[in-house]
Length: 434
Image (cartoon, rainbow, N blue to C red; front, top):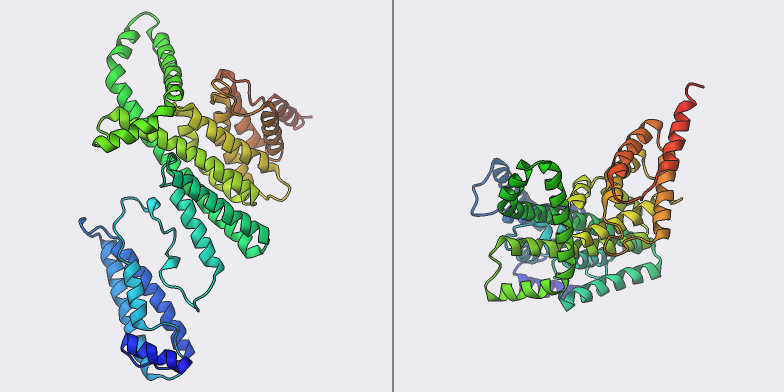
């Protein structure tokens, strides 16, 4: 049967099957993978742009790698040993079909999460890594599919089913697939949310500057004008928040009609598009966070959340209270799991989490339009913050509590109340001189 397969390969691919050494076969496959990946990286270079020095260097590396592959192929044809898993014609044809994708404007919107799909070593058959790639692809597609599409719920249910079945088997490799793919999806979605909020804030700032510059300047010329202008700005934020909540139901349908009639042409519509996208990504990130908690990869999410300083700042300035509410919920889930017994979180991660996200807890519009967190959830978060603070050095506690007191004193909300933690830090500081 093996001889028959070799005969069929000789006819199909037009070359005589040799038996090169296993060492040469291994070197050949490793070089083939390297050559395929360099071809993919070179093919993704924008052809309309002028090549940079790094692009020329990448192209030369690709040429040298493929030349090395040809030399190895010649050696394999004349040095006998075991057969190779793939013929070179089949390999080149497979790589060619994957190495020439259509150029994409954003690397984050690619449907292929990794280059592991380029060349597979080994025999054809079921693979745990293939299951991980499939789950990664589904989670990446969630960020691209509109939330109003029925395929969005279909993809989410499919990802949920794969993760549940992996957990039901209980095998370590399957559990690791859930952890790795969820950690990657958490980082990707939080980055997309941050970029969307940046565009949303830019659009509304530009719109407000065009429409309200002369009126704001006129108000400031009046007696107590600075006070009145700040009051008007706060009133405008409240009005925009109410408008956003009331009009949210019909916004998606109106935007779809405008796209069908010829696209979106005005800046206000573009701001609405970004606002809807931000709300979709925030709700999606909340779903991923719940899965992160269920499948035991909270430590990775906590590390990524501790570096999300831009997102923490933007969540304070966004006018969409629903997006802000989702981010508050995500932070609350992560903070409550910060004191888990099985987690080993470093001092730096704890410090950054408290420094970046406590201002959001103080200034977010909790309960202004709808309850974001229940009373019990707020008590749990306060308890977790107090426990984390007690584990930090006194110098870190001073920075965190000083910033908290400054935010808490001017915020409308009475949560989180860290007076007990502040008094304990003061008492600890007095013991130094006793």
